[in-house]
Amino acid sequence: MADPFYETGWLIPLGLLVVVLPLPCYFLYNIFLHPLRSYAGPWYTKASLIWYLYHSFVGDYHIATLELHLKYGPVVRVAPNELAYTDPQAWKDIYGHRSGQPENVKDPSRALDDNPDHPSILFAGREEHSKVRRLLSNAFSDKAIREQEHIISSYVDLMIRGLHQICEEPVDMTKWYNFTTFDIIGHLAFAESFDCLTSSSYHPWIEIIFSTFKFVTWLRALKRLAPGFSSFVRRLIPKRIIREHESNFALSKEKLLRRKERRPEYTDFMTHLLLAEEKGQMPMESVLSNAPVLVVAGSETTATLLSGATFYLSQHPRVYKLLVEEIRSAFQGPSEITVASTGGLKYLLAVLDEALRLYPPLVNNHTRLTPAGGAMIAGRWVPPNTMVGINQYSAFRSPDNFHRSEEFVPERSLNTDDPQWARDKRQVIQPFSFGPRNCIGRNLAYVEMRLIMSRLLFEFDLELQKESGDWLNQKVFASYEKKPLFVKLCPVRRQ
Image (cartoon, rainbow, N blue to C red; front, top):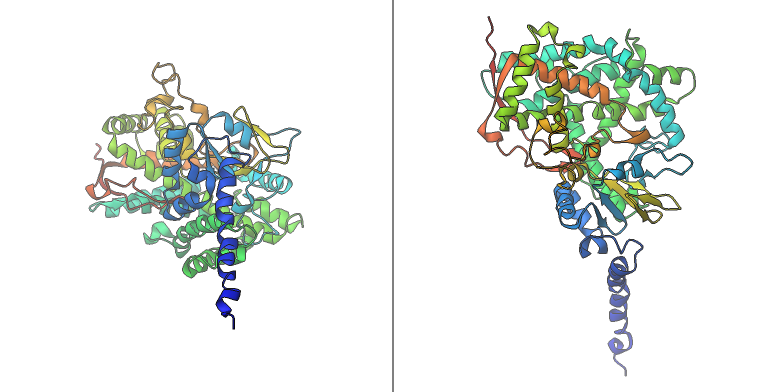
């Protein structure tokens, strides 16, 4: 009688072969036969998504990408179907207006709207994006910002008063910047603040937002691995992260419905969106989709940049001294520090711009997908359906783009005729992105940053504490996972 194993045992190695064989074939195809095979990059990023997934999950993707650019140049194949650029021309070619040509659409794996039928301004198609942007632009106009100035200034006043009360001990400025920017945006979006400054603590929603950043990063990575299986890959994310992300949406709805009952005298973020909803031009679901985006984009990014600027100032006494002299010589009292007057502080603007260069709040690749006919990017044709993007952290620190690229030198934007800065490619610095989908809140962000930094340095001398000396050693999940920035604040004594 025949042994059953010898009759069926061949099925085991055959099954293993069927399962295992496609992997090396897949790797070899990506390295040697893929349409992007001629682009520079290490074999392991060309072969699979393993490198991308690993660095996305551990939070050091920005640093790993910079290392690849330093080795392989201004365009690197960072995944089987993705190219990353540091060339300034890539901003126009990837994100700019493409008259008569299809746009490089946003990468579908990045779309994470809770209601895909009513996407936010971040992921809406061209027509819907233009419609929402037109409505929102009213709240970000120069006229609207002038109307909002008393609101912004009132929260800056609250910040300064709060810091005076606790300045005997070192203060975590990362928290206080977040308190201020979230309270401002809460008022401008919902006509009510988050009461962070009055309570000296985070609103629960803000703590939830920090978990949302990890949710966004991890889900995007998993969607790249298994496109079309969003519901499945969500199960791989810790339940706490998902629960807190969903609470974020619920809190947005609650605040938005309260805002709808109010009629503020000034134009805020929701004014024209809610008018469009009342006229039947926009469903409430679309208004709701945009609410949390406006709050996070208009607060966390500004607080992040202020934290970074403060750290760099503390590490560069020469720069700190020049900035303090500019601010304190320009004003006799805090009432003189306004939107208009701070606009004339050239060295302050240079400091903020240099902080944006070295510590841009949004450091992922901002990927787009090339259209069916492919696209010319940085002088070279890229095949259709290729993911392309600029990693701001890499582009802004590239020695191809900047002399002394890792150094904090605000003068590089002031003394452009100086031979050592003459070859800097400053056009690559686009921290608010570029083209028709660039950040609509750029002007408001600069207004807040100038007012907050001017008032802070007018009122206090700053001294970084030793425990925050390695503050820049941070992980990134959509934005920086910022550590406490402990600073000793010494009130300035005046006659």
